[in-house]
Length: 398
Image (cartoon, rainbow, N blue to C red):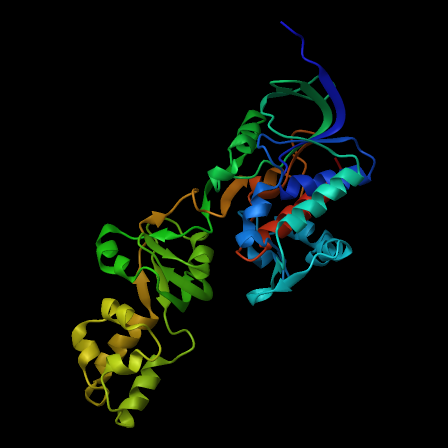
């Protein structure tokens, strides 16, 4: 049996995604010898697919409030020390053309490849070695506190080990529970994981009624408890999707009801009352169809309410229409799960890490960054910014 070669290096980073590459660049700048290992055949797969291939790489407005975590203060340190403006400086240095969309979201004009190539060029400039198609089968901490990593081909020995292996979302992009297994091995606590930024599915009774609306998109306000998002909601065969639904899904738990206002900019009671006073010549359906699709109205409101002439509508009927269209309650059956989720909510418990360095408080030299940590951003470039910020912070210390 051939004895495996052991490669000695300063830093091993497991995961060649956004946070791992950023950490590698920063550690490389400090003269650290860095190896990045990934089980996939390509670095930055999620970068390439994100934003419809245009990579929503950050947002003009980044605040701690844009993130979910059991420790909502944890992300503040990293986000304040490596900001969206710092990442934009890098993007501008590479002359990557980009544009702003709604809510401060920034996308590449051309391709997500521009962002990945920028990161890979920075890695090359700082002598970072990237090893792909490599599974780590075992990790142990030696008596001198170094880490020994076993793979099929070689062993790797390092002073600092960074877990940047991501979460469980989008398994076709090589997602795996690797980082959580390492945390469990070293007795580092985890916050239970669930799918975030994912479409919601119908209960069976609702599916029959609403699946024919598949393809209809409406600008809505979607609310759950004290959080709300105002963006498009898309009806699908399986349930509800669109940006507002993806956002609320990160907060939703089974058994909870969400509220949807299909006319978030209107006071429907006032509007209907005013049209009644002005003796509008038409039915409620005629009037409401100016703002909402007829097919949708017919599914949500009874035919008797829709067919009443506006002039004959009672106060009680006006309130019933407004309630149904502006305070519609629905209890989803579930989310579509990790298959279509953009992120994983939960992960490494932030209380077990230093917010300054991302190092484990219990295990010297072991760091966790990016999606594997219990910090989950809203839709809109926030998860990438967390990757850049957390990776940058760890890169100053590994």
